[in-house]
Amino acid sequence: MVLLNRFIQRLVRRKPIDLSTVNQSPLARVLTLLDLTALGIGSTLGAGIYVVAGQVARETAGPSVVLSFFIAAVASVMAGLCYAEFGSRVPKTGSAYVYSYVTVGELAAFVIGWNLILEYVIGTASVARAWSANFDSLINNTIQNFFEEHLPLKVAGLSPYPDFFSFGITLLLTVILAVGVKESTTFNNIFTGVNLLVVLYVIICGLFKVDINNWYLSKTDAPLPEAFDRVGWGVAKYIIAVGAVCGLSTSLLGAMFPMPRVIYAMAGDGVIFRFLSTINKRFKTPLVATILSGFLAGVMAMLFDLKELVDMMSIGTLLAYTLVAVSVLIIRYRVHVVVPEHPQSQLPPIPAFETSPLYMEESSLPGAGTKRDEDENGEDTAPGSASFDNHVQTKDVSSEEMYRDSQCLLPAAQDSPLQYESSNLLKRLFRPLAADPTQQTQKLVIYCVGIVSAIIIVFNTLIIYLEAYLVKKSFWAIILVAVVGLTAILMVVIIACQPQNKAKVNFKVPFLPVLPVISTFVNIYLMLKLSAATWIRFGVWMALGFLIYFGYGLMHSTLERDNILVVSGRPPDSYGAVGHSPVVPTLTEPSYDSPPAYSEQILPADTEQSPKDKTGPLQ
Image 1 (spheres, rainbow, N blue to C red):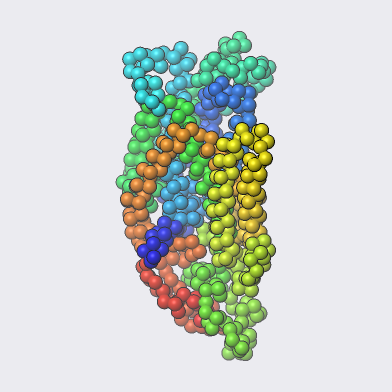
Image 2 (cartoon, one colour):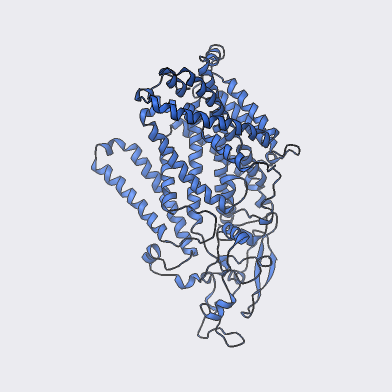
């Protein structure tokens, strides 16, 4: 049992962040606000509008393709809000991987990071394939006809022919990214500007030639040029073709740019092979990660067709979105901590579970028994008294401390959770008296989030596979779906009734917990609509990832190497910076006249404290 508990703790250990070095990086920091904005726009306006729109309109949705894109946009916006809160809490490179590592735990971080790699690799491959298909359609499918005749691939699940053109495009941009970030973003900025002008041209000119018959096109690889060519606007066809080349190029660069950086972050933490975190001294880029990921993306672009690539990218992206939404939901209900009045640079905060009266013996609490605690002047120092409040004060949170508290997810609490605990189950669920999170409310939220996530999966499965019965208004199907749906709503109401963490961060997701739950619902629904073949490929990818993590990452991660065990409920900063042993504060003098005096014990992560130590500092 002890070994199992230790193993689970290793899976949920969290990464500490040293704020004094948060802005230091071996990577070249040369991007301006314009560069970052252009990267975001370029990665958005690409294959979706120039290629995928035609495929979806012709083969799946028809005119309702607008609704399809709207649903996808809603899912992306909600995920973006969750990402924004993560980013405001952890100001460090690595995307949702680092955010979840600091706030949730190592295994969840690995799963998110591994799916981000899938998203970026497949995203790069799909855009490269779309680039090739769009260009080939403008030259009467010369490339496709040549390779289908001379090098056909008659293998189920693969492309009809090897697309060496998309492979070459991917390798070319890989070299550009490996040489330097600034050079590649200059190219991106120019192409993004051209792309925006062409999109504006299409919108304005298209208003004069709106025709519902254009939804069903003869070509799916170049729908916009085909539509304008049909109405006699031959010049527009070539203008849009230029925009498509620019848009797909910037989209390809936008997909490739974050890919090696996520790999670099994971390899730097040791959860995947460390040699992937090597930084080239000349170019200041993760050279090995860039080359290997670019080569992998190029091979996939060469061997798989666009639809299969888009489906694979979608499932990885949607799972990452789901995990981020669930993580935000959990961290907003984490525990508070009372910080003794003491200079922050000299005293680490006390973990909440060690100071909480819920974890102390009754005899060790101030005010326990029949006699109230008094200081040497005869003043009452029991919790809740004015004298006690003068000695143990809530720290104001600002600037660097704001980031510290937001990372730890443990802002200062004004009241002890002891006075708020209730023995009534219904009151705990729906009317907790605590103004701030406690250990009990934190655990309750975690259980409810797990239950509501499982219910969402069941609910989506029912509405997808019982669709025919629901359309026929079958009584049993309606009742079954209604019961499952109401149960999910009940769990959301219970979560909403619990006190939230009040850490000051630059951005918080609004309408909690409803928005993350809706985001999870939409993401899982879209995932379940994907084909069985896509799920099989995804399962193989995840199996490979778990093989790497449990075979290598779990034993070679930085936290394992440095013997740091930061688990949920304990603030990372109270256990020292990265690369140091945990610092466990212990009280040496139980005096309430002045700030408590502390000594520090350096303990390995697997060292057990005695029961006396676990009762906390107020002994």
